[in-house]
Image (tube, rainbow, N blue to C red; front, side, top):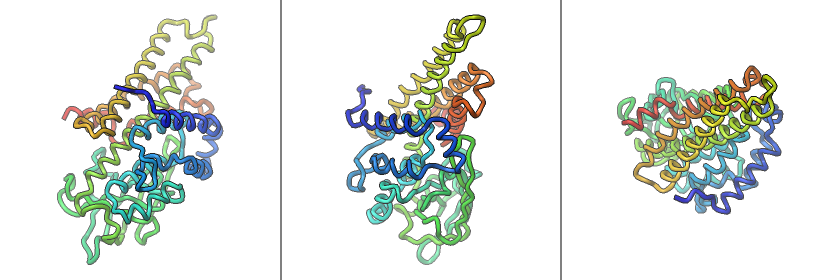
Length: 373
């Protein structure tokens, strides 16, 4: 199996690496977090460089990339803990739209997503749903020309800055049935929508969105009524691959920072790296990182090629990433001692992002159960 990046992919990786080096030192990132969101200037720059159009077909105004190209980008974003809503808008929100939307719906929204003037967010999680995206209680009551939606969606990534939401709601079936789930693209300023934004522990932004009798017409429906789960699940799988790549990038920074620290810090008149127990720890961190990267390649290529075992590989990847993220993060913090949890050292910030990634789109235990099933 060929793991070599194409020339274009390597150019993209190098471009993002330079962007992170120039713009995402810890002080700059902390300043962006303090302002409550992300940098509009950086988002515009990403659009101008063509990064926002990478996962979309040429027919939709993009560059014809796939999950492998997104993986290359997200790994580099992970090395800088980039705050801009690439995952929320491009991978999740627009990811569902490009699969289920009509030609007219895609033409109305995707060019604006690609040029950075509009943002989408995927609203699928509910307080009662746990890790299961098919557990949907937000209801759509039939009206003359569509539905009236009532309920609350939680943990909507970058929902506060989104111009529209791709919303899953139930139009038929039981609470946990995969059939009967409908997707709709709803502008954020529609009557009956209330958005409550809040920061998350990793410095990103999330929202709770209340739908109180929100009118949805047939023009807002993505795909067929009651048949939205396939597109929703595919977008979530893309999200899992994306945050797994981000985690791999973050783990690389953590293990390299930790190795460098043990070589600089002295104990008992010796560098910490001279002690065998710490040498073993560094090797274990490196092995967890390498295993995660290998599984990331396998799962991403399976999904991109439409392999029969793609879904099972996604579950395996999310389980492995969750375990490795905790191991690498905990050992990085412990090796740095009290400094590891300070705001002034970037180690703790990377660990907090990895903790969130472990829980996002289903935690380690959930995906192990799904893999075994």
